[in-house]
Length: 114
Length: 111
Image (cartoon, rainbow over all chains, first blue to last red; front, side, top):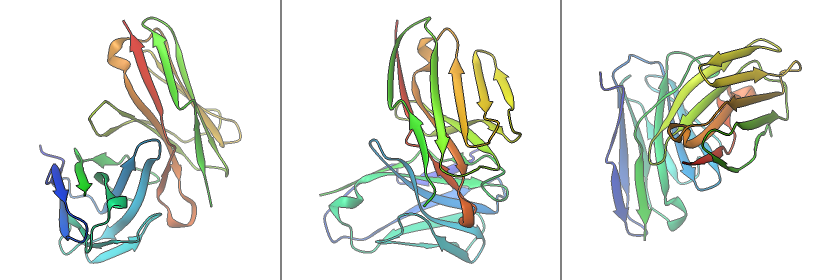
């Protein structure tokens, strides 16, 4: 049982390049989330989705876009990468609203912007 | 906006010593969750507390939810090297209904 799978695991980009991070879950969860984790900052919510075809902004959405075309997939896009977006990105999913259900995290994507 | 504050930021202990991390919210929470992240790993759900004054135990770990549902604590008795990692609390995030994570307490255990 794979759970939450993130690809790629590592990536180095140059400033201004674009890329998409993919998150896939096989638990039939309704809710999916993208977080970034920076040293000393904990986990900050970028965007989230409460179901297929829906997305919403989190705490730090600027510079990112997301799409949830299929229930099992949640994509995070960086249109024009900036050094400030160097971080570890975690995807998570949960069965219903995240306030009442545990969130299951992927292994993370370590992204460096030069 | 709502904040979830966690202290201490770092804790270094000798193996066998006890460890406690504290979590405080600026608003009343409906529930609180605790996660553990091993070095280089991802957060893993440990437990959820819902009731005022609730206390739950998992082997050497004791979790408490305050009477006012604005604070919580995690206590580890007789730490082991396997306890190394960062412990996060997370409370419900108000109008968005999402989790607000504390910044975590990083625990190191010296054998």
